[in-house]
Image (tube, rainbow, N blue to C red; front, side, top):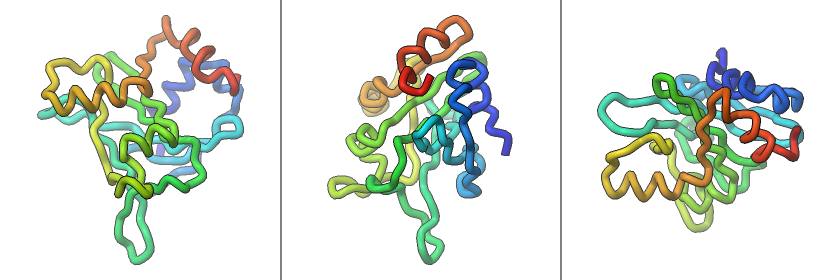
Amino acid sequence: MNFHAFKRFFDLAPALAAAQPVIEVEEQNSDYESGVARIGNELWRIRTARITPTKPGAFVAVWKRGEGGSTRPFTADESMSGLLVFVEDQDRFGYFQFTKTHLISLGYVSSDVHPGKRGFRVYPAWCTDLNPQASRTQRAQGPAFSELSPTTARDHFSARWAALI
């Protein structure tokens, strides 16, 4: 697996690349460039969301295969810092940095409060003309989203990932 979006992310952040990320490929969800990345001392699940032609936003699968071969959502008690979801739409590029706490509050991972999800839609800030439910989801996901370009990446990474660079 080539992890195109993850590489683009690090190309925009040479200082963050000094944290020497290591990726362990997850064969499940391989259509979504799925893996676990060690960035500094933190473990992050990574996925690349897929743009769908008939709906705004992008879809990402976030399940894993449980015992007996059935799929199940990730759980809140897994030892991960969170989930990085990369989104590429024509010339735009960004990512969602969902912390474990944010994933729990959104109901994306299973916990005592939520059953979790096996996949969900992400709505980057550039998505407009959304229906009311998609707009609510976009607002809830908003704090996790960052759009990146060569001109904005340096300041962004200095602020958001300061502990690792």
